[in-house]
Image 1 (cartoon, helix red, strand yellow):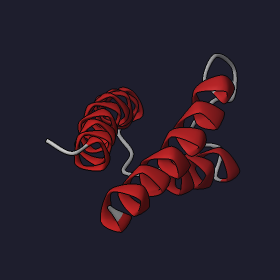
Image 2 (tube, rainbow, N blue to C red):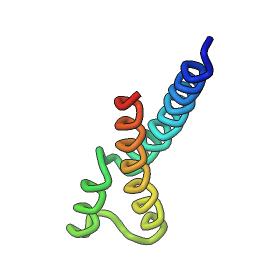
Image 3 (cartoon, rainbow, N blue to C red):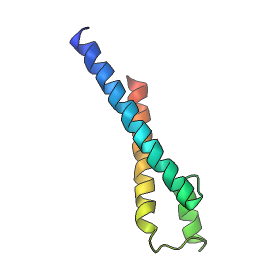
Length: 79
């Protein structure tokens, strides 16, 4: 197998693995807060339906993971 093909396939495997990890973490946060996205979680904060105490760090993690998910998808699409 040519080195370039091996490199590309290794990158593809890494991206799929990391994507699965990110999807799992996102799923756990969606389940924990019964929301579909960080935007929905933010709306619940604004409406006073979700207490910021003990959840604010999760909100930032959620937002970061959504961005990482999008970045990973773009990287996979570019391969």
